[in-house]
Image (tube, rainbow, N blue to C red; front, side, top):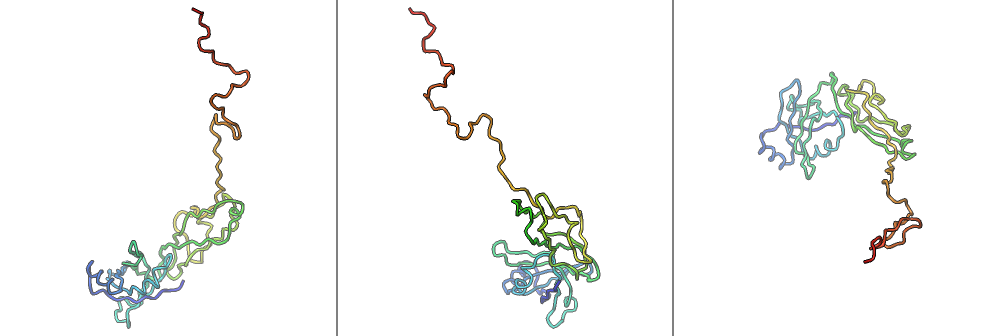
Length: 230
């Protein structure tokens, strides 16, 4: 996986008012934290964040660079993006959380799945149904896969790929229940509802009001029949 470099500076203003001022200046407020450091309030270029970080999928290793290397506590720190808050309408990045990692310690990250090929079951009328979009794995920060590829070509109807079936790079292991299905092929959907009981068959005409009764059918008695005269 390629490392993404991004320039970072310590924040001189704090609070909501300070964050609004940073955004007005074209910068994104952020926080840097980790198990072996105190949280640090930092800021990044909005243009650089949108160009390098906003479109990343999954977990990517990021190297923070301080201008001229002047702040040794920030310069060349290796981090992951833990959260990125966006504007609900424009999608613009409003805030970022960076988690510092130790390159020698394994960690758990989410990696996106990529489906390739056309399943045999789809060719015969089935429907390809992804169940998971990403999977959690454990590995060193330098070994995080950009994505995990799954060839669905051999899948027939009712076949599935499970977490245990994934082909992972050396040093990368799945986390959690490996029997979970990742993708499957569903049978084609058909309308197999039975005809309602008593409903006329197709092509049969319903009797119309006033039509003569069928031969042999009982007829209602004439009005007044059965009464004596006078």
